[in-house]
Length: 312
Image 1 (cartoon, rainbow, N blue to C red):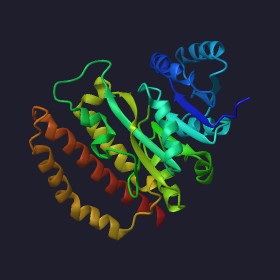
Image 2 (cartoon, rainbow, N blue to C red):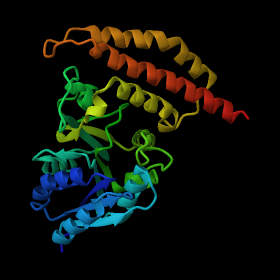
Image 3 (spheres, rainbow, N blue to C red):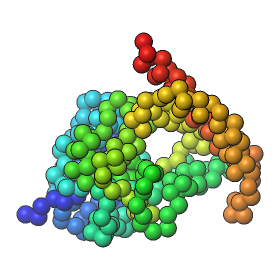
Protein backbone atom coordinates (compact mmCIF):
# COMPACT_ATOMS: atom_id res chain seq x y z
CA UNK A 1 0.00 0.00 0.00
CA UNK A 2 1.29 3.46 -0.95
CA UNK A 3 1.81 5.81 2.01
CA UNK A 4 -0.28 8.97 2.02
CA UNK A 5 1.89 12.05 1.55
CA UNK A 6 -0.73 14.69 0.79
CA UNK A 7 -4.03 15.23 2.61
CA UNK A 8 -6.49 17.62 0.96
CA UNK A 9 -8.94 19.06 3.49
CA UNK A 10 -12.18 20.68 2.36
CA UNK A 11 -14.13 22.25 5.22
CA UNK A 12 -17.76 22.90 4.34
CA UNK A 13 -20.84 24.49 5.85
CA UNK A 14 -24.22 24.57 4.08
CA UNK A 15 -22.73 24.60 0.59
CA UNK A 16 -23.90 21.36 -0.97
CA UNK A 17 -23.99 22.75 -4.53
CA UNK A 18 -20.53 24.29 -4.23
CA UNK A 19 -19.10 21.11 -2.73
CA UNK A 20 -20.54 19.08 -5.59
CA UNK A 21 -18.97 21.43 -8.12
CA UNK A 22 -15.60 21.32 -6.35
CA UNK A 23 -15.55 17.51 -6.25
CA UNK A 24 -16.45 17.34 -9.92
CA UNK A 25 -13.32 19.32 -10.75
CA UNK A 26 -11.06 17.67 -8.17
CA UNK A 27 -11.94 13.99 -8.48
CA UNK A 28 -10.30 13.53 -11.88
CA UNK A 29 -7.04 14.93 -10.47
CA UNK A 30 -7.17 12.66 -7.42
CA UNK A 31 -7.49 9.60 -9.65
CA UNK A 32 -4.12 10.34 -11.25
CA UNK A 33 -2.13 9.93 -8.02
CA UNK A 34 -1.92 7.28 -5.33
CA UNK A 35 -0.36 9.15 -2.42
CA UNK A 36 -3.17 11.67 -1.84
CA UNK A 37 -6.34 11.55 0.21
CA UNK A 38 -9.35 13.86 0.40
CA UNK A 39 -11.02 14.70 3.72
CA UNK A 40 -14.42 16.39 3.71
CA UNK A 41 -15.05 18.09 7.05
CA UNK A 42 -18.71 18.99 7.56
CA UNK A 43 -19.02 21.81 10.11
CA UNK A 44 -22.66 21.21 11.18
CA UNK A 45 -24.37 21.76 7.84
CA UNK A 46 -28.17 21.92 8.00
CA UNK A 47 -28.79 21.57 4.25
CA UNK A 48 -28.26 18.44 2.14
CA UNK A 49 -24.47 18.57 2.45
CA UNK A 50 -24.21 15.52 4.71
CA UNK A 51 -26.41 13.31 2.50
CA UNK A 52 -24.55 14.31 -0.64
CA UNK A 53 -21.08 14.01 0.92
CA UNK A 54 -21.74 10.58 2.44
CA UNK A 55 -23.11 9.29 -0.86
CA UNK A 56 -20.15 10.67 -2.79
CA UNK A 57 -17.60 9.21 -0.37
CA UNK A 58 -19.38 5.84 -0.46
CA UNK A 59 -18.90 5.79 -4.23
CA UNK A 60 -15.28 6.98 -3.96
CA UNK A 61 -13.95 5.20 -0.87
CA UNK A 62 -10.49 4.93 -2.33
CA UNK A 63 -10.32 8.73 -2.73
CA UNK A 64 -12.08 10.34 0.20
CA UNK A 65 -13.33 10.24 3.78
CA UNK A 66 -16.12 12.19 5.45
CA UNK A 67 -16.05 13.61 8.99
CA UNK A 68 -18.30 15.88 11.04
CA UNK A 69 -16.87 18.60 13.29
CA UNK A 70 -19.58 19.48 15.84
CA UNK A 71 -17.87 22.62 17.16
CA UNK A 72 -18.93 25.52 14.96
CA UNK A 73 -16.14 27.48 13.34
CA UNK A 74 -13.72 27.18 10.43
CA UNK A 75 -10.71 26.80 12.73
CA UNK A 76 -12.36 23.87 14.51
CA UNK A 77 -13.05 22.26 11.14
CA UNK A 78 -9.51 22.82 9.90
CA UNK A 79 -8.08 21.36 13.10
CA UNK A 80 -10.36 18.35 12.70
CA UNK A 81 -8.93 17.87 9.23
CA UNK A 82 -5.39 18.04 10.63
CA UNK A 83 -6.17 15.43 13.31
CA UNK A 84 -7.71 13.03 10.78
CA UNK A 85 -5.14 13.53 8.03
CA UNK A 86 -2.51 10.87 7.30
CA UNK A 87 -0.29 12.98 5.06
CA UNK A 88 2.88 14.86 5.91
CA UNK A 89 1.51 17.74 3.87
CA UNK A 90 -1.91 19.27 4.59
CA UNK A 91 -3.72 21.17 1.85
CA UNK A 92 -6.72 23.40 2.60
CA UNK A 93 -9.12 24.19 -0.24
CA UNK A 94 -12.17 26.44 0.16
CA UNK A 95 -15.49 24.73 -0.47
CA UNK A 96 -16.80 27.64 -2.59
CA UNK A 97 -13.95 27.35 -5.07
CA UNK A 98 -12.72 24.87 -7.64
CA UNK A 99 -9.17 24.03 -8.69
CA UNK A 100 -7.51 24.63 -12.03
CA UNK A 101 -6.82 21.55 -14.15
CA UNK A 102 -3.20 21.20 -13.02
CA UNK A 103 -3.74 22.37 -9.42
CA UNK A 104 -2.77 19.11 -7.72
CA UNK A 105 0.20 18.34 -9.96
CA UNK A 106 1.50 21.88 -9.47
CA UNK A 107 1.29 21.48 -5.68
CA UNK A 108 3.25 18.24 -5.90
CA UNK A 109 5.81 19.92 -8.16
CA UNK A 110 6.27 22.82 -5.74
CA UNK A 111 6.68 20.47 -2.78
CA UNK A 112 9.44 18.61 -4.67
CA UNK A 113 11.24 21.60 -6.11
CA UNK A 114 10.93 24.29 -3.44
CA UNK A 115 12.22 24.33 0.12
CA UNK A 116 9.01 25.71 1.63
CA UNK A 117 7.42 24.63 4.89
CA UNK A 118 4.14 26.18 3.77
CA UNK A 119 2.96 27.97 0.66
CA UNK A 120 -0.14 29.42 -0.84
CA UNK A 121 -1.44 29.77 -4.34
CA UNK A 122 -3.43 32.27 -6.35
CA UNK A 123 -7.17 32.63 -6.36
CA UNK A 124 -9.00 34.19 -9.28
CA UNK A 125 -12.63 35.37 -9.26
CA UNK A 126 -15.47 33.10 -10.33
CA UNK A 127 -18.71 34.97 -11.08
CA UNK A 128 -21.28 32.19 -10.94
CA UNK A 129 -24.18 34.62 -10.40
CA UNK A 130 -22.96 37.40 -12.68
CA UNK A 131 -20.74 40.44 -12.34
CA UNK A 132 -21.73 44.05 -11.66
CA UNK A 133 -20.42 46.59 -14.16
CA UNK A 134 -17.93 48.34 -11.89
CA UNK A 135 -16.44 45.36 -10.06
CA UNK A 136 -12.84 44.63 -11.07
CA UNK A 137 -11.25 41.19 -11.14
CA UNK A 138 -8.45 42.48 -8.91
CA UNK A 139 -10.95 42.94 -6.06
CA UNK A 140 -11.58 39.19 -6.04
CA UNK A 141 -8.01 37.98 -6.35
CA UNK A 142 -4.98 37.85 -4.08
CA UNK A 143 -2.75 38.48 -7.11
CA UNK A 144 -3.54 42.17 -6.62
CA UNK A 145 -1.17 42.25 -3.63
CA UNK A 146 0.86 39.05 -4.13
CA UNK A 147 2.17 40.14 -7.50
CA UNK A 148 4.90 37.51 -7.92
CA UNK A 149 5.17 35.97 -11.39
CA UNK A 150 7.08 32.90 -10.18
CA UNK A 151 7.37 30.94 -6.90
CA UNK A 152 8.81 33.22 -4.21
CA UNK A 153 9.59 33.25 -0.51
CA UNK A 154 7.32 35.45 1.60
CA UNK A 155 9.34 37.40 4.15
CA UNK A 156 6.60 39.65 5.50
CA UNK A 157 3.39 38.81 3.63
CA UNK A 158 0.82 36.07 4.18
CA UNK A 159 -0.86 33.84 1.65
CA UNK A 160 -4.58 33.08 1.58
CA UNK A 161 -5.92 30.20 3.62
CA UNK A 162 -8.38 28.88 1.05
CA UNK A 163 -5.61 27.64 -1.24
CA UNK A 164 -2.87 26.72 1.18
CA UNK A 165 -0.34 23.93 1.73
CA UNK A 166 1.40 23.24 5.07
CA UNK A 167 3.90 20.74 6.37
CA UNK A 168 2.25 18.78 9.16
CA UNK A 169 5.08 19.64 11.57
CA UNK A 170 4.44 23.36 11.02
CA UNK A 171 0.77 23.09 11.97
CA UNK A 172 1.63 20.90 14.92
CA UNK A 173 4.16 23.48 16.11
CA UNK A 174 1.49 26.23 16.06
CA UNK A 175 -1.05 23.84 17.66
CA UNK A 176 -3.24 24.16 14.59
CA UNK A 177 -5.51 27.13 14.04
CA UNK A 178 -6.67 29.33 16.96
CA UNK A 179 -10.35 28.51 17.48
CA UNK A 180 -11.24 31.97 18.80
CA UNK A 181 -10.47 33.40 15.36
CA UNK A 182 -11.89 32.90 11.89
CA UNK A 183 -15.32 32.32 10.41
CA UNK A 184 -18.05 30.98 12.68
CA UNK A 185 -21.14 29.88 10.77
CA UNK A 186 -22.42 32.96 8.98
CA UNK A 187 -20.29 35.38 11.04
CA UNK A 188 -17.55 37.12 9.07
CA UNK A 189 -14.20 36.98 10.85
CA UNK A 190 -10.56 36.68 9.87
CA UNK A 191 -7.11 36.37 11.37
CA UNK A 192 -6.52 32.68 12.03
CA UNK A 193 -4.54 32.12 8.83
CA UNK A 194 -2.24 35.10 9.41
CA UNK A 195 -1.76 34.08 13.04
CA UNK A 196 -0.52 30.63 12.04
CA UNK A 197 1.77 32.00 9.35
CA UNK A 198 3.24 34.80 11.47
CA UNK A 199 3.81 32.37 14.35
CA UNK A 200 5.47 29.85 12.03
CA UNK A 201 7.67 32.54 10.50
CA UNK A 202 8.90 33.58 13.95
CA UNK A 203 9.73 29.93 14.64
CA UNK A 204 11.95 29.81 11.57
CA UNK A 205 9.66 28.09 9.06
CA UNK A 206 9.90 29.18 5.42
CA UNK A 207 6.73 30.46 3.77
CA UNK A 208 6.24 30.80 0.04
CA UNK A 209 3.80 31.66 -2.71
CA UNK A 210 3.34 29.91 -6.04
CA UNK A 211 1.17 31.83 -8.55
CA UNK A 212 0.85 28.66 -10.63
CA UNK A 213 -1.21 26.90 -7.93
CA UNK A 214 -4.54 28.36 -9.02
CA UNK A 215 -8.12 28.07 -7.83
CA UNK A 216 -11.24 29.92 -8.94
CA UNK A 217 -13.08 31.41 -5.97
CA UNK A 218 -16.75 32.32 -5.89
CA UNK A 219 -17.54 36.02 -5.81
CA UNK A 220 -21.27 36.38 -5.17
CA UNK A 221 -23.30 39.48 -5.87
CA UNK A 222 -23.27 40.28 -2.14
CA UNK A 223 -19.51 40.74 -2.29
CA UNK A 224 -19.90 43.10 -5.23
CA UNK A 225 -21.48 45.84 -3.11
CA UNK A 226 -20.10 48.87 -1.30
CA UNK A 227 -21.54 47.57 1.97
CA UNK A 228 -19.47 44.40 1.66
CA UNK A 229 -16.24 46.39 1.19
CA UNK A 230 -17.08 48.24 4.41
CA UNK A 231 -18.00 45.05 6.27
CA UNK A 232 -14.87 43.23 5.17
CA UNK A 233 -12.59 46.13 6.07
CA UNK A 234 -14.23 46.40 9.48
CA UNK A 235 -13.75 42.67 10.18
CA UNK A 236 -10.10 42.66 9.06
CA UNK A 237 -9.32 45.68 11.23
CA UNK A 238 -11.13 44.22 14.24
CA UNK A 239 -9.09 41.00 14.03
CA UNK A 240 -5.75 42.68 13.26
CA UNK A 241 -4.14 42.56 16.72
CA UNK A 242 -5.00 38.93 17.40
CA UNK A 243 -3.93 37.82 13.92
CA UNK A 244 -0.52 39.43 14.46
CA UNK A 245 -0.34 38.13 18.04
CA UNK A 246 0.40 41.69 19.16
CA UNK A 247 -0.69 43.69 22.17
CA UNK A 248 -1.72 47.24 21.24
CA UNK A 249 0.31 50.00 22.86
CA UNK A 250 -0.37 53.71 23.28
CA UNK A 251 2.45 54.54 20.86
CA UNK A 252 1.13 52.12 18.23
CA UNK A 253 -2.36 53.60 18.52
CA UNK A 254 -1.00 57.13 18.24
CA UNK A 255 0.80 56.17 15.03
CA UNK A 256 -2.44 54.72 13.65
CA UNK A 257 -4.30 57.93 14.50
CA UNK A 258 -1.66 60.16 12.94
CA UNK A 259 -1.46 58.08 9.76
CA UNK A 260 -5.22 57.69 9.30
CA UNK A 261 -5.70 60.58 6.87
CA UNK A 262 -2.44 60.04 4.92
CA UNK A 263 -3.18 56.31 4.48
CA UNK A 264 -6.74 56.92 3.28
CA UNK A 265 -5.59 59.77 1.01
CA UNK A 266 -2.93 57.53 -0.52
CA UNK A 267 -5.54 54.85 -1.19
CA UNK A 268 -7.76 57.46 -2.86
CA UNK A 269 -4.96 58.67 -5.13
CA UNK A 270 -4.07 55.11 -6.13
CA UNK A 271 -7.66 54.38 -7.16
CA UNK A 272 -7.76 57.52 -9.32
CA UNK A 273 -4.83 56.35 -11.43
CA UNK A 274 -5.90 55.36 -14.90
CA UNK A 275 -6.15 51.66 -15.72
CA UNK A 276 -5.95 51.16 -19.50
CA UNK A 277 -7.42 47.66 -19.16
CA UNK A 278 -10.63 48.67 -17.40
CA UNK A 279 -13.08 51.60 -17.61
CA UNK A 280 -13.37 53.83 -14.56
CA UNK A 281 -16.52 54.09 -12.45
CA UNK A 282 -16.94 56.16 -9.29
CA UNK A 283 -17.29 52.93 -7.29
CA UNK A 284 -13.68 52.10 -8.20
CA UNK A 285 -12.62 54.86 -5.83
CA UNK A 286 -15.38 54.65 -3.23
CA UNK A 287 -15.22 50.88 -2.65
CA UNK A 288 -11.46 50.55 -1.86
CA UNK A 289 -11.47 53.78 0.15
CA UNK A 290 -14.49 52.65 2.17
CA UNK A 291 -12.71 49.41 2.94
CA UNK A 292 -9.55 51.25 4.01
CA UNK A 293 -11.47 53.67 6.25
CA UNK A 294 -13.33 50.78 7.87
CA UNK A 295 -10.12 48.79 8.33
CA UNK A 296 -8.11 51.61 9.87
CA UNK A 297 -10.98 52.76 12.11
CA UNK A 298 -11.74 49.25 13.31
CA UNK A 299 -8.06 48.51 13.90
CA UNK A 300 -7.76 51.62 16.06
CA UNK A 301 -10.97 51.05 18.03
CA UNK A 302 -10.28 47.37 18.68
CA UNK A 303 -6.79 48.31 19.84
CA UNK A 304 -8.15 50.92 22.22
CA UNK A 305 -10.67 48.43 23.59
CA UNK A 306 -8.01 45.77 24.17
CA UNK A 307 -5.69 48.28 25.80
CA UNK A 308 -8.40 49.44 28.23
CA UNK A 309 -9.34 45.85 29.10
CA UNK A 310 -5.71 44.89 29.74
CA UNK A 311 -5.36 47.70 32.29
CA UNK A 312 -8.42 46.87 34.35
